Image 1 (tube, rainbow, N blue to C red):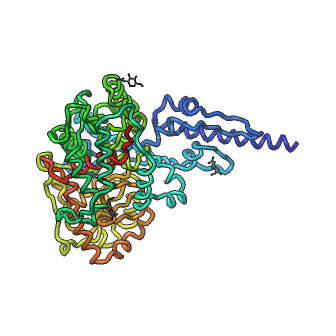
Image 2 (cartoon, rainbow, N blue to C red):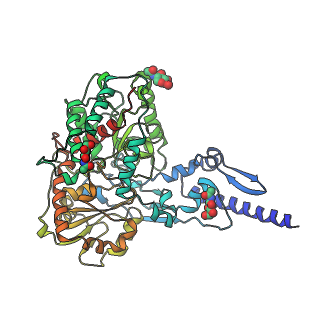
Image 3 (tube, rainbow, N blue to C red):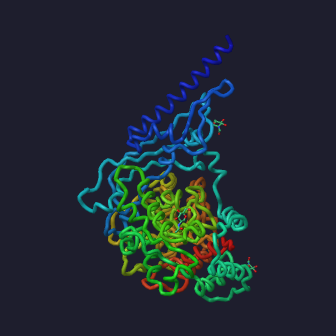
Length: 574
Ligand SMILES: *[C@@H]1O[C@H](CO)[C@@H](O)[C@H](O)[C@H]1NC(C)=O
Ligand SMILES: *[C@@H]1O[C@H](CO)[C@@H](O)[C@H](O)[C@H]1NC(C)=O
Ligand SMILES: *[C@@H]1O[C@H](CO)[C@@H](O)[C@H](O)[C@H]1NC(C)=O
């Protein structure tokens, strides 16, 4: 009798579980997720099985995460820059049609115990689907308005899955420094299959950097801005003296080899880097045998523009495109095989870059704007946080550079932007129209050259850089550009040039959960401390500027330096 009741109860549980999974699938289908494969991928790719273990039913998931969740976890959030001739506003917060947000909050049934990853993804995450109701004219600007698809399937990583958990799991800047040190001590590239002179030179550079003489008296570099100024200086000098980069000639335009396609807008970092790298007489070598690094010259933005199929909600084909390129160079040359790609690198600013490169290109040094310590395998000490820069004029990337002196900065804090992601909504709920010192807005009305936005940046003490769908935002570099102290609200964001810059000396980091306290946090910083920080912002500016012709310590050299620095510290010669 007791047995039967137990059996019935368990059967009931199983039915509940199946019903729940089915319901979720139906909803996903309804909203046109990568359908077709939904059912089969959930059950075949994941090899999920319902099994009877010791008399109780469980859903047994393989260690691999079910495909459907992989796909959902990728944020389809597209940054706004659908105009091929973008104005600033359109890039920062382009004018889009209203969106209907559908929030699917998975129901939790206490009766259901789901083991493994299915547990984490199904019960804990909030799937937010933003559904646009109208689109820009499709006949115009075909390539660029894909961003306006704006369909976001936003399911956060495990961190935000569980509220209590996510608070504990925020990785602070000092945690990140610890992680970097740990990674440096424990993780190396693979031992090359055969030795090269370049390995010896890298090893030699490593020893010289580790034993750098104390060198803190450079008028161009304030030691407070750096993790270790002596090491940075030594490393930079050695890079200038030693580094040789080989650039593959393979790959078709415009996805490869066409920097001019991406010199404007919010992805401009990858275009400018490619331009300067290809034009560099100093660092480029035609002889791959003497190269320390191999550059894969593609644009993640053009990959999306050319290959993303609107409404497909999948970037599998983009991933495959890059895999085909890899297969080509792996078959044709020996360089990749020598180290399984660990001396290869790319520079990519699109939000999707981490996801697209996670599977086949993860052994490379990945320089990416979307630098989330908790997502898509971003590895401190190997991967590089690429600054996201918004460029409005390809002829004059320094247009409107600078800001007002501190005495004329009348606003305590400024933010404006479109409601990408939940965090900005929370920010506005707490601070929009609440306090005259806090200039916190949604999207600002259009103005010529985005002047209203820029004037606020130039005349505020603190500029709030709140994350959007992803951790990165062009505001961090904009704040520095306009001499406003950046206030970064983006848990788990690895700031650019993390290896060398002492970010906490010139920027404020506020945890997402502390938004209600934002004003108090800013007011608790004394005037004298603020003055010091603002001065440092001006001193650090040189590292974030694109010049038509690169100059020493500029952003081009700093990106290349971070890639070099990581390579040097991971060297593992034969
Ligand atoms: C699944 O979630 C339940 C309830 O939240 C928890 O008790 C259980 O330990 C979890 N299982 C795994 C394998 O994480
Ligand atoms: C910086 O690095 C050098 C060389 O390794 C070392 O001698 C020095 O103590 C370091 N300075 C600080 C402040 O850690
Ligand atoms: C590199 O290795 C792969 C697989 O190990 C092999 O198929 C390929 O031919 C190798 N490339 C060269 C140029 O030897």
